[in-house]
Image (cartoon, rainbow, N blue to C red; front, top):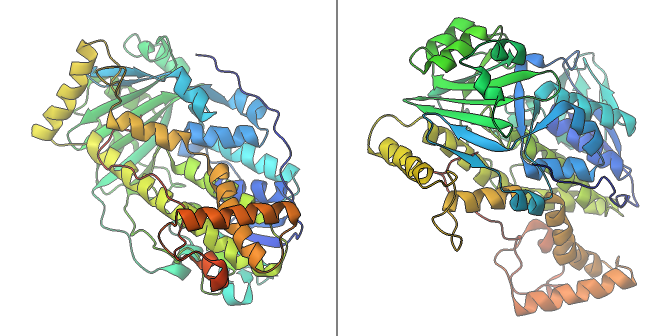
Length: 502
């Protein structure tokens, strides 16, 4: 499947007022945030505790079309090409059936489904951020954060200050701890992440079929309290495995090697091909699959109005989730779109609350769906499991893709949801907020030029005709005489819990 994508996009709008951001954390969300903010002219200092970017232990990552389209918009298509493979189809265990990505759907999303090493994606983002002028400081652990003082104290004793602090240091970082002290729920599952060399797979007659499919494929195995996702990787030729199984006491962190016997024991009751893949693995990590209490409205932003959580600091996802990297990069894209309109310091807090308003529902709902997919794949034997398997077998017997509907006139709910998630354009959503609400506030304070003033007037008329639901922070700052009776946040699609992620 070959779909052409342009690398020619108009340059981004640069902010009239350029301020300084301190980003705590150099994972995908922090680096994406640095890139996006530098593209519009803001100064960025990023602090990362790791000494190097060598994160090969973390294995593979799946980049959904809603992620790929942002990287293409940032001009990274050609740099992404050598490190990635384009996914074409999905196979599920028995085999219950395949699913081939619909070319028209991918074209409409303006993205692709890509398989790559996590380390390669992180390195690409790092190199891009540095090339754009971001000040990235590795081996720089943070000791404390004082949002009221807009300062960060390093373990070295150095104190750094900025106009805005971005907490991008993950679910267990200092930043999230400032906003909530709720611990994660006790976990039932762990996930092992590993890679196996393509050369070793091709040498085994039982395994080489993994590389003999007409499309580059992702494979899904469902089992009793267990599931496996496997997919080939671009760059260094390897095959990634995510192995989900019951808690076994071997879980640790993303940076600590795991005991391979734990993963192999988890695969012991699986089909022979999975057991062979487990035997060929030479390394792995094992992390808990933990659910965190979702942060609610106004919990992503410190009460000082000058610190924001993004990425997994704001919305932790299950390990191996298809949307983890996508949501992190969407965060950076949305934040920069909002701050491209910065003219005055009094807009800073407004834009932070607008960011939360745009991102909270989407990230929370997608996270719920990701956990639902794990439970869907790991169903114990019983009526639900039999219904799931028979559903897929029925489509296979009819020659349909596993997510296809019975007729052209209808779609399965799962496929509809997937298209909505993949088709989402984070930057367009931020642009819509500015047109509908940002300009309204600017008009109220007399800071809209003639062209934008006309647009603001149109927005007011639209809201009087079709009011939305709830007053948000950035609308509250508008004098009442400038408001419609009810002004609310943009509406977002909601996703179901029990659906198959592919």
